[in-house]
Length: 268
Image 1 (cartoon, rainbow, N blue to C red):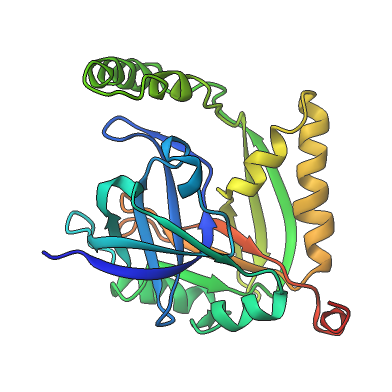
Image 2 (cartoon, rainbow, N blue to C red):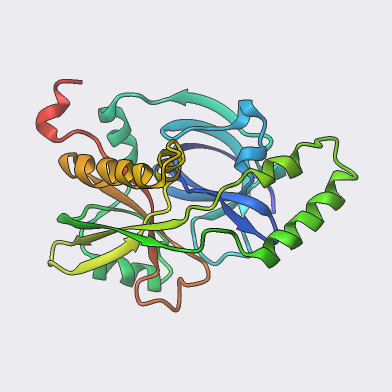
């Protein structure tokens, strides 16, 4: 299978997770120059050279191949685990962002979206909720799985014997696990209620800006519930490979898009 060079407008960077196979990973998704969704995985984002560390709403250029280990139609692998990514222009104006992102279908009915996923038509989507009704905060495990950490540490030490980048193990050590699970409860156009977990990098980065745990929770809720409810809020949804075919609703929230309301756009 030959690599393909593509341009992608980055819309999604999830909070880093641990993988026994790949170390620390970020799921990246975006809209291609042709207006189609693409998932780029695996990407060891924080181990990329600084010049290759892309931001949301930025165009990048990279070589990818279809991920044949993943049945989801949008899934592709970056060549050289993302080391050949070329950073391009960043899009600042909300109207320009909308023109790129809204080339894809905007779903408003969760039942229709789930049916599409089950028919293997999509595993990434833009969803417009009718209303966000709640923002849930639930305690979860405060540390990564000990067995998984041990396995990754052992493999990292072995790799460092042959790798000139001696910082990779230290970088891995500094990854923090969010001690809370954050979720939106929302209704769709038929008033069907769903509650989906949020895995947006932006949320995790905001939480860790504050040393005091209660202040961190307050700031996250203030931004993602109080403030974003006043915006023209859209949800970037994605399925996980593990639960795509077995969960009644296989989607999680992998990002948020929140341009100003239409009557505010003229101010920008």
